[in-house]
Image 1 (cartoon, rainbow, N blue to C red):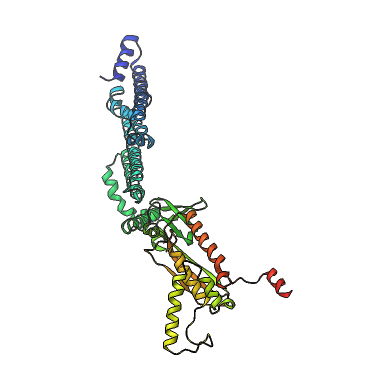
Image 2 (tube, rainbow, N blue to C red; image 1 turned 90 degrees about the vertical axis):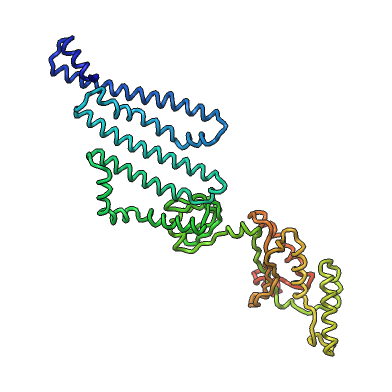
Length: 417
């Protein structure tokens, strides 16, 4: 006998109530008993067991159990206790064959399915947390794959709930989804595109968490902080966050600076424009003056001897500097820059190194420094770059050169005076 029948029999035989009143009060008593049992199960699960688990986790030295607590795995598991009591004990408290038992059983089973999906969701969140702490997985789009699994889990849970409430087999409902394929593709279009993009991003290693990327179309310029199923989140240098659709990383172009980080160097590519009117041959006074520059003296001696031998072998008339080959101030300046830059500790000598002329135009002759610095950190890199060009601009007068500067108001006034 169940609690409902026991209570009904007691009320009818002992107290003397009519069978109808005894049956109704028995059902109500059984329902109240079931609710009290569910409340007790919920109290024990949340107030006793859950607190005990959290206390044990806080005292242990391991971190994975703390991550389980943070992911709320045990919090969601605790919701199973009252639902299991209702599902398993409804026939004990109310009785077999009662309509209320069937209703309680179906709704409690549907609730158990949803709670189970929530527990799996929390466990997958725990997996993502562990992956982010793993050196080998921290830069992989694990979150994208986990989100795909979450969608599948929740979709299956919803199907189970609907099948339970309709008293149908879940597999029969799954078989009927073929007709809804077009609708599902429309609803989950972004997720499907994101899934395909995530597979390509992961397989080709296009983007990883921590990469510095530039996506001009979306105004993104900063570090990748998250790669999910639908979006790639970038924290820009001004600390704003830009969300980019995952499939845009496949369909549109972007720049990834990871190669620079892995190469061990950062490129310096900047020019100083020389006033064309200041370029001339080196005379004896200028030559003697520049011979005092320690890093330049070996070059001047070797180059001067080379030119003397070349001119002598061809019987060049030295009465005019136009005849034969001569040292120029801009050529000597370029040679000085090469010698000086190679001596800097910040120069990465294993990578491309050039000091070259670019095509002259109405703004003068560009002398471009194309090299790589050992320093990749932004602030330190900018300091090195500034120091190099501070020095370049300061030594120009020593070679009789002037930097080109577009005339401004003050320049025009000085010329008029």
